[in-house]
Length: 311
Image 1: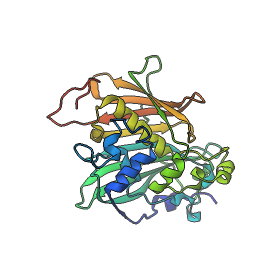
Image 2: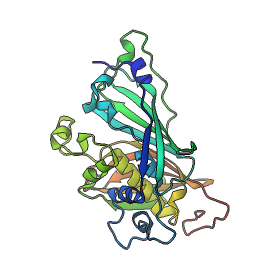
Image 3: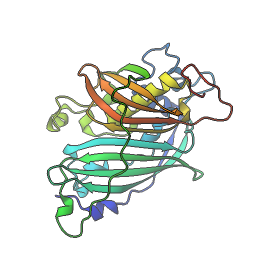
Image 4: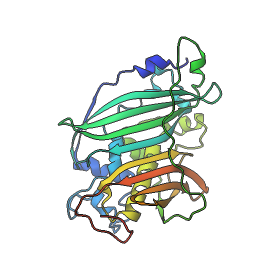
């Protein structure tokens, strides 16, 4: 069954209303591994409600709020879910996330790009995350590679192919990174991260992983995404991670639970609150994130910390 451009582009997603508590905010941070080192001052405010100043929220928690579930595996989509891979994740925050509250996720498919029968297709889904008062908290874009669904625009019936999103900026090739962060991923990380709402069996069931070409379940791309975002926060923003306003990455290879993620970070010249990044798995010397970009916003009462960052 081939995917139907018009059916998917017009697919209706009911609004996802989600209430979350401080417990959920702490659980999100814990699924990424924060708290592994009890004396880690950078992680402590995200996992303990009694921290000075109260519980902080990792901004990337936005990507697990208002999520409609793993709908791409439904038969009506025509998508070959065993050949689906997370390609890119882009997020823009319009306001800080509260540590608890109620949000509404409005989801839609914005792009379907045909790369050819032998090259697959690309799907872009967009989520607008709103607070109860109607104010927009975040705009989230997920780029998914549909490796088994290319060629749909060649089937006739007026099926077009959309233009791709603007490309993300690569990291410098011949300049050493300004900061390097190393993070050991917990062996049970994928099983924990499933509790955030993505129950794709690829991340839990060895038999499903094998059918998808892996010798064991892989880590969710969004878990790697959250770990990399915290790497930038930990290295460069002196515990003011809640001021992250944009975080974009491209996924270049899967990560397995238990591996070590090394995130390399570059300042953007003439943009002191913006960084480029990539990440690799040390055990395999394999790049797993590329074309990363992090941007921070700060208030007028800011000072400069030892990273040269405004805080």
